[in-house]
Amino acid sequence: MAAETAEKTRGSTDDFRPTPLPMPRGSSDSSSDGGNEDASTQPVITDHSDPPHSWLSPKLALPIALIVGGAIIGGGTYGVVAYVQNLVENATVDGDEAKWLQAARTQAYDACYLGCNDCNDPEYAWKACQTTAKAVVKGINCDANKMWNWAAADRYPRPCLKAVGVILMGDALERLKADYRKRFAIITVTVLGGLAVGVLVYFLIRKFTKTKSQFTAAQQHSPISSAPPSWSITRPATWKTKPSKKEKVHKEKSSSDHYHGGGGSTIPTAYTDSYTPASMPLAGHSSRSSSRSSRSSSRPRSPSPVSPVAERASLSRRSSSSSSNASSRGGSSSPRVSTVVTGLVALSPTVSAYACTGRDAAWTQHFVSTNGTISGAVHGWFSECRDKKTCRDSCSNSCTTNSSGVRKCSKKCTQHCTTDTVTDRIPKSYVDAVMPKVQHCGFKLVDAVPHAVGTRVANAAIEKNLWVRISVSGYNVTKSGETDEGVVCLHGLGGKS
Image (cartoon, rainbow, N blue to C red):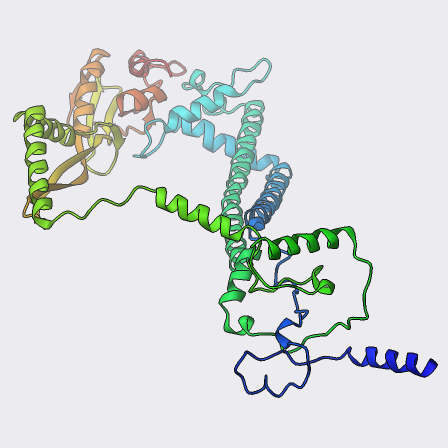
């Protein structure tokens, strides 16, 4: 009895060995199998491992790309902002008091008193005078416009120089901070870099990942994956376990498909829990096929082809009707009106007058007082310029003939614009406009003067409003310590500074 039990146990364990898969019917290897069981009915356990990169779904490409790009943009922006803010907060300029006292004297007071020599800004002296007016010192009026005719030793009060120096130092510090703030433009580079990396990550994920359905389709169409596996494991019939609830349901479904026309072959009881042959159609497959065929049959049929002769006739009728409708809507005068309006708009110049230098010759007109004690000159070097934009249309006609014999023509126009700088007024015209006012102050025009005229009439509004500079031989020529009335009159020609 023990021997028989041992023989049965040894026979049952010998059956658990890898066996080659059965060859198709008609093959020479199939006839050499001496076993009694049909090889085609023996199930196999194939390798259903997950496809490569199946852990990363292509649906995650956009979120991951947004996260990566946003991290780069956010991190780069934070770094740039922190860097620039640190520069701005720690920005400093030279705090040497002597340096800023000299700057206040030359850049503010001297510029207001002496003006400039043919500079390109008519408001140069006016801006300097406004800087001195900002200085506030208790008990002292630091406005250079109020000290224009003071003695040279009194026109530069030291407390005013200190106050104006502080203003200039603050302006220099603000310019330095403004230069530092320009580095915020680096944020543009970080944004572009983040977008580029995000797009790259998105396309890489889409390229190297596949959905489960795409991987299955690729396996079915691949000649390697469609070949049968090179091994199988035969499970002995003595290995019978109690089926679970899920196995019972699956077994009943398989039996129902077999006996009620579901198709397929009978599957051994021991393998219904984990094996479904690829050649076995799933339950309900025939019903889905019939539903798809019914839906496809219910779709509307495509229209019957139209002959080329009928198509050309239809095209000619449509083209003639569209041309008649266009002529009835537009009329004959609308294209001409639109062309005229377009031409007027294109040829209209853009007027923006501004002061310019170097285009025309400077002009100087001398004058003297009636008693010959005061000499002076009116010097002009500004011209009134503007940029004139001229546009013209260059048009060409092109015609094409389609397959139906209909000829269509179109007009294509390209606008060419040029900008030229033109002069409306020359320096001599500004000098001539001021001379009647100079004569009204008691002076007469001469070709030459006996004295040097190197003292500017320090009213910045003369250059700002009249675009000329008025100079005289001195303020107090007639009486020492008193400004001549003629000079005071000339000072008032520009109005209040």
